[in-house]
Image (cartoon, rainbow, N blue to C red; front, side, top):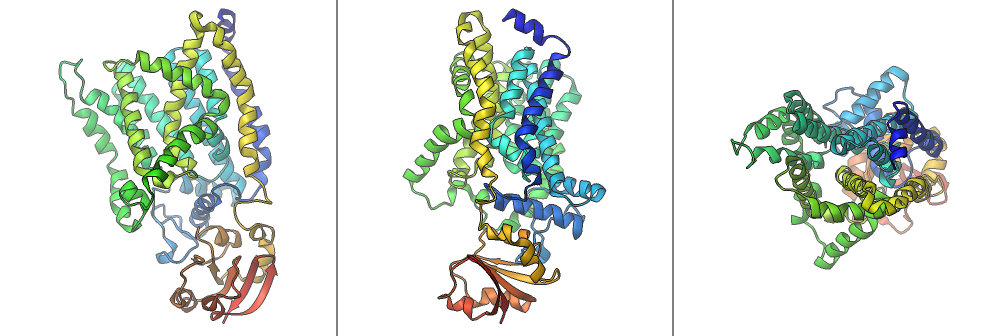
Length: 486
């Protein structure tokens, strides 16, 4: 182990290590850069990409993120602050509109996150080998592996969140005020991009109330983060009332699941999502070892320990509040858990490096070698043009459909609950309708406002509401049918 530490301490070793990690990751992902927006949660990806495209083509004002679905006034759809989408649109202004630029932006963001985890781990452990290993394991977290090249603002929020924690831990070690300010700035950016990352703000409570200090209560650790976060808070005060019945805001208070269903969600995320997608099966033994020894050695009087305890408590509260929405599918809702999970893994590695437990070092080696393979096997099939996450003819026939529908024409999409996938692939504006409970008024709204085409992938022969509003069938390929409005 000492010989390995000597090698790691060579000034060129981290550079070589990161180049190796980047090379393997690029080799695994390079084919994805040429693909259209497909795969798991393609609805969320197309929604993000649509906002990017509209910033570039329609309105560059960052306060007016737009979708192609005109159910929203002028298509304006304000949720979390669209910083990630707007930054990509800036790149489009410089280099042109290309999806691979979007993918490259989020891919580079991922590596900034990984470097942040390296710095954070080194700040905590002062061990370069452990820090490099955490960077490696973090890179091959399956959920990060998948979303690293997909249009998803959560990636940027995670990056800001990691650096916020890093600067806070640096502050606790050095007590230089600029580090505290930087931590607050990165936190407010993280929360602006994705609201759930506000749980990281709990770390400031470790100094707000500190029995070890002469002044037990220090208001600056609440007031400074609050004042720096005012622009983000103003945004949410403005937009949240427009979200209507959004389940994210109402949380578990407003859900229709039974207690047994909620318990099933908890056990599924604990025993399936966390080991399989968040951490990686190859890293689970290190997580278990780290958690076991960390619980035994936690010191509530230590400000750093207390910071992570408070974050952990709020993460659990967040999960319980949103678990009906997280369910078994929304893995990216769990991004805020990633830094804490891998810090626990780092502690497990530190324990194994102790001579007393050195016989476990082969678990680290095994995890190091296997995790790139397991991440690839788990996620690579998600990018499959034959199973793109929606009816594949919308992808394979998009050029033909675009040739039939003039650019200025508006389309009614029947049966697309995502409200984004079909309109994105058509590159047209219009109105997306669900499949069930649709009334004549739903069609009439779009027709009165200029819709001239109706497209669907549903069985509609016996749907009287649908048939009353369409005339000629212009295109048919398997389930996809394009009609003129009657």
